[in-house]
Length: 162
Length: 162
DNA sequence: GCTTGACTCTGTAGTCACTCAAGGGTTTCT
DNA sequence: AGAAACCCTTGAGTGACTACAGAGTCAAGC
Ligand SMILES: [Zn+2]
Ligand SMILES: [Zn+2]
Ligand SMILES: [Zn+2]
Ligand SMILES: [Zn+2]
Image 1 (cartoon, rainbow over the protein chains, first blue to last red):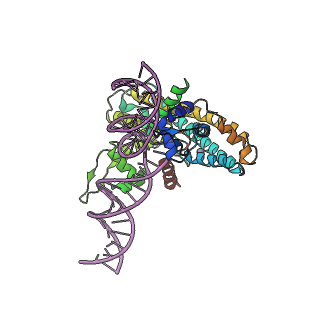
Image 2: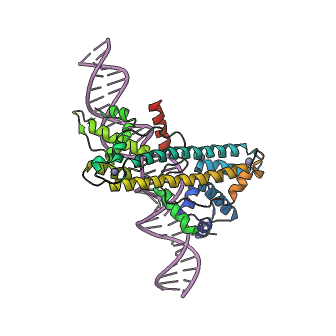
Image 3: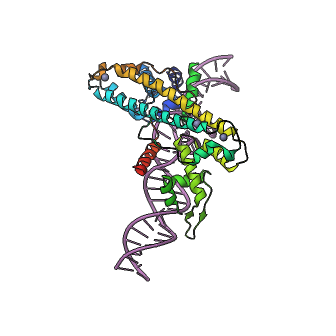
């Protein structure tokens, strides 16, 4: 199949597939006479795997490790477990941070019950003092605003599923 | 004061301050004879404000709006409230997504109680099927892995606090 | 006056995981 | 044959920084 069909199957952009190839996540496929990429079932499997992992918010590096184990069926999978445990830790940590954030934001919000003039707005006042306490630690889970890239990815998801 | 002192005061990188200036968040400061940036108390206040907001995971665009209201004390602050409400929504939404993620990841983790060979690892098997259900919506709160940038910011925070 | 070292300047490139667009070539349908 | 749909490569853009190169500035000590 050609790249467009693969993209439809996996609910991905064509560009994303080419990007994975450049990045070494997808193997270089055969080419047709007209220089088109030609994919087979293994590519479909692999791309599904990658997209599943991305859906679970793993980094491409994390996914690379998992793919290695899929390619080496005889190896012990203890490292897979470790990787997953670490990643669960990443997510849990980010959630804690966001919980603390939500608390602080709601605190802040209560400082201005209803609108008045900006000079006396409790929110702006609150933000002028250093409220932020914890700061982020070393989790790699993203914050409250996905990149522009992620936002468009999200739209892509909806478009392909809805 | 010079840029280094300002950076120490605010717990920021020097480069970040220059970046904010380029981006229009910090006003262009006066220069010394030797072409050094010279800052005063207003700059300190403003940078603290910005860093507080960043600590609450707002985007620079969101912060730009808040800064506008700080500059216009006579305006009604209803938009401040709305912005904060929306941002709280961003955080809440991201938390829901991460909760769903955590559930899926723990599910997945249970498929491989203890290590065996990769060929029979329930985790790898599970990832080969499309588990991912929801997909991200339009929240702009980042995912489980902060950028490289964020991770270093985190380290900076610790270095300045510990 | 000279050196050392800490600080600062500008400008450019890199991060992550894509996304988009320009400017072409290929295939398929009518 | 012509048009539409698809594909190709290359290069640039996203957010919020960070890092580095190569140069200039400043205070202290000798
Ligand atoms: Zn992770
Ligand atoms: Zn208010
Ligand atoms: Zn927000
Ligand atoms: Zn296993």
